[in-house]
Length: 287
Image (cartoon, rainbow, N blue to C red; front, side, top):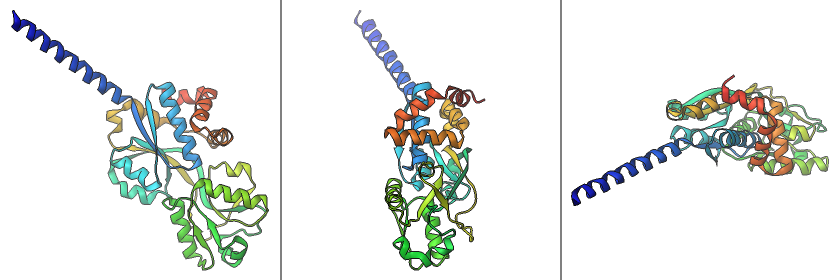
């Protein structure tokens, strides 16, 4: 009589383990790791993606901050599922080449973007070529962001190709760059910074891009969504949403402005998706 009891005990234990494993597998399928760079536009877009995944799709989404090159390499190595802040065709082309065939470019999620060197409107300089002759007025500095960003690579080329022997490119962060910009503008002092559109600074201050006669910063860019190679097979609903995620400059400017005012990226993103249900539904339905 003991053998059936032992047999049933083992059977139930086996069934329990199968159910437990199945539950774990299902839970794993509802997790997402989205990489982002700590730029204002990337923070806004990535938090909107997280808000949709968690509030509308039942996902547990982790946002992972890293530098520009790591966005691509972490996606290629499957450490993250993807990111929504790839600047193409020019700015991130170097990183795209390094990631090779291990990533999938889903195309633009935001068009009409731009990068370059930026000054306040009151500064009577209109071209990068004229910067070095006015170096002292700019304290001999171009205020940059994190050294790994693609725009910094172009800025280094600009310093070299425009023979700016009296100007130094100063690395930092997006937040540090805008703080220097704020202080200089408040005193109506001259300042030149690395700049890109979209960015909330263009809504707050009167700024202008310097002309780039050598074309170092390229033309119009787009912000693309990039995912790991096997995402469509493993998490088709996540892939489908990321593939259909796209919006307009006014949309992302609204989110960036909300974040600047509240200091709460995720809460601002949740509020925005609540205020824009039709846009969110178009991402989820693919229409």
